[in-house]
Image (tube, one colour):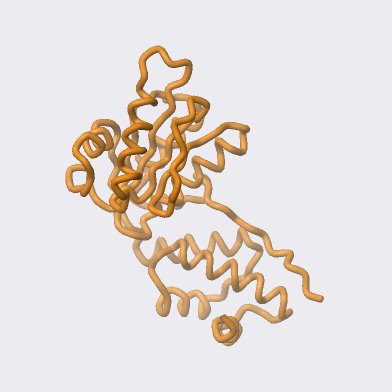
Length: 225
């Protein structure tokens, strides 16, 4: 029986390749280190695949790993929770897709987070595909998303994406040859999150089948899915 002993590498600030987004990464690192923990909100925006969800998930995992609590809203949230004063950060992902219900709850969170005299004023970190002024949201929420720190995340170029995939493969203990790497970059989505998930699946499949990492192995795995 082949055992699934692959190494899972989740999103973190440490494995986020900044490219032209060094200022955004440095801002989040300072907040995580406790140097700039103020209630001023931060909004990051950019095209699909620019790393927005990676950053929000990394912040959530870090805080929860230290025993803290976070509030999370995204377009898949069916029953948003009421504001919890124990939350250290409020994370709002893909805000451009928020329904009226989610917009109402996000605004409610903002109001509660800014309550004067509260024992804790959680940080708001939000992400979307558009700059704040272009978001199709209610005005009071849109202006709150844009009044603090705003960072435009740039997509990585092909050389940077290649470097990210090689580093991710090394973290998984995989030897990713140039032919397989070129095949991945030329045949599949430019979304790094998708490519990293594909690498994780391929690593698990190679362990299960006891076969080396090759293009035929990738094709065989895809044929079975």
